[in-house]
Length: 313
Ligand SMILES: Nc1ncnc2c1ncn2[C@@H]1O[C@H](COP(=O)(O)OP(=O)(O)OP(=O)(O)O)[C@@H](O)[C@H]1O
Ligand SMILES: [Mg+2]
Image (cartoon, rainbow, N blue to C red):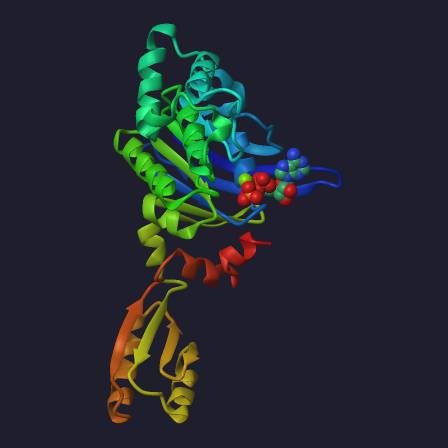
């Protein structure tokens, strides 16, 4: 549905590369997570996809058409929930929705039903006549989402829609997104929260300094063999001479004296080698795991940084 090829974006003078030869394929019906720390280029990428910011090079295709040449169709098909609040604080939720429905070109006859759908989806029923400026952070995020849905988009782009909100609103938003996807909407979701992306997305691209580090189905990435680790937790400390012996044969990291990790694409060979050694030393295995436990671990292996540390910079 969306194909991004060799996308480059330079900003400022001297020019700074913000998007560095980005390649992405976002299939129809997916919940696609764009995960990256502050300044990675997530908002810039969405802004180019929506035709709000010009690209420097490459191509961005929506249903096979170059976005820049089909702005009206693209904007009619994509809903956008921006990172910053995009409504009038002095107006009530209802007044905002009426205004933005007209601005989005929703036909008059459909405005009421469409606004009702957006209010229901975001759970704003009991707050509809309150001024937006008096809303909590969570309600503001939900109003932002409701406005992004007004044009009944085929694709919904959400730019960090859960920053600074209470757990109830956060869950509400994540569940609403999952339900919208179930009804057929393609979702593009930017975040620097790994857990959220793991919870709701089927595919992910991890972006850092404008480069896509990794991209694909989350389940497959967590099993990716070229970087995967076998983690073995033993019930007693591993004697130093045994560890040294294993080190000569495998790429082993000693997490602590009872826990080793072995980077390998052939876990069975490692297990076969470990088994007699552990038996001889009278050591038992408490836990064993192959692959990445979660996206955080995958990201750490790729970048040697924690995403959160990075995000808090
Ligand atoms: N209008 C602009 N002019 C110059 N530089 C910009 C502009 N907009 C963004 N940048 C720079 O581009 C880089 C990427 O910014 P962008 O906002 O796309 O990142 P992000 O991943 O959305 O970050 P965040 O998580 O903080 O929202 C940053 O270094 C930022 O300073
Ligand atoms: Mg951003």
